[in-house]
Length: 146
Image 1 (cartoon, rainbow, N blue to C red):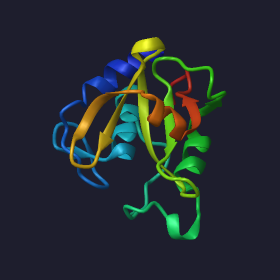
Image 2 (cartoon, rainbow, N blue to C red):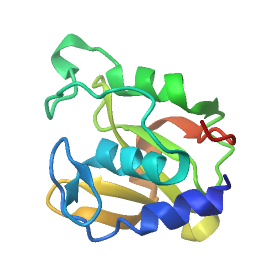
Image 3 (cartoon, rainbow, N blue to C red):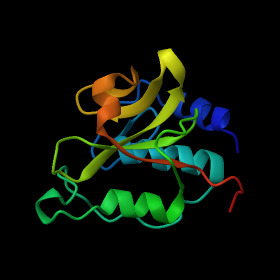
């Protein structure tokens, strides 16, 4: 699959309300649910079951669960080598765990990403300097289907 296919699939989720632990286009999803839904649309069945998770993403324990799961199923790449369709992982505060992700939609001066955001649902946001500073990892979808 191409980055353009990933972006098109993610854009199809724009307007989906934010619902913690959900992954149903049009009905509700969180940031992980968005990625899960895009995976199902482009690759088929999810590669592993998702256990229940809290809004803090295991932050009190300092456990990088979201990062570890991304590393198991996506291909890690250099943060500076951005491309449309990349999955970007964010650390929302210093010393916190990485607990937000999105799909990069555009690169360059008009860079943007698609993500499910509490209180806003799935939106496409500018990948502004404050957001860029929070990126801790970048991944791409595997090219071959399951």
